[in-house]
Amino acid sequence: MNSEQEDNEIPNTFRDHWEWRRFRAWELHKAGWRQARIAEALGVTKGAVSQWFKQVRAAGLGALRSRREESGRQPGLTDADLERLKACLKQGPEAYGFRGEVWTQPRVRAVIRKEFAITYTSRHVGRLLEKIGWTRQKPMERADQRDEAAVAEWYEETMPGLKKKPQRRDVPSSS
Image 1: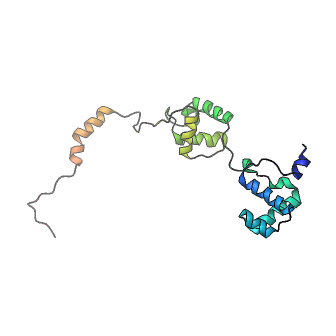
Image 2: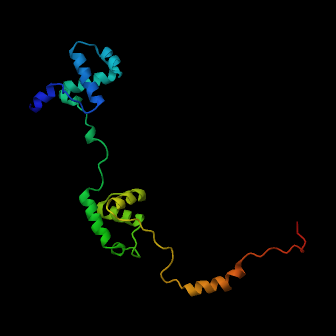
Image 3: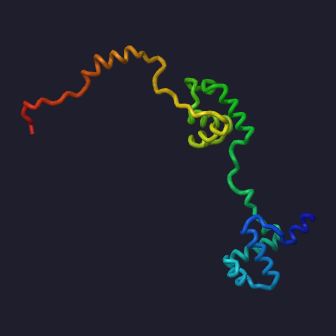
């Protein structure tokens, strides 16, 4: 069956119920039904039926076909892109100007934006990392040059003097 025949024949199978409804409207029209009656029978507006028939007159019966598989947002990163992302991440965060050897979601998000010109939320970046087999990492919030002995000394000697002292009760109040 060539494409010209397909455009002039009603298919036996339909992609969805909306497509079936449009082709059914055309069948009823060919059987002599009025547009208002077709609209009532199919539960649509008269304007919808009018638009369908206008499309058939302009482009043939193929205009009634559903185009659902073409709609919707396409995935931003293909499988090949995900492999390339994996290779980028293997270079380490310092290769992209980050301090430390930990990949965080915001860092990976920045790499994706730089390498692929696509912006994702940090949450979705977590899903992508999971998809490529990487685990999420959380950096330690301490400086590399932290001196644990100096911190302990500060807590013992300086911290007690900074703590708030209870007020003396034997002094009369000014209020």
